[in-house]
Image 1: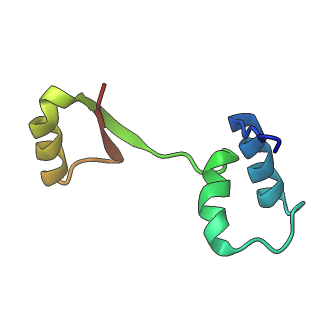
Image 2 (image 1 turned 30 degrees about the horizontal axis):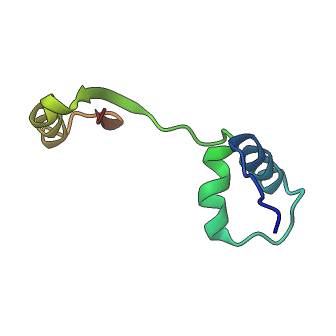
Length: 75
């Protein structure tokens, strides 16, 4: 049996082909993966917090002043 390696580059190329219409008849659910991978959708990040500041991140969300996603780094 031959092992197949799937790289990020390959997935990105397939996503671009789906978005451009080169690969027809794609289920809508696949577009939720294809569009971000092809760079058509970019998330708006409001702020990034360290895991130790998770309560500050929560406060930011509760004030409803966040203009994008509030990201918590887990490292």
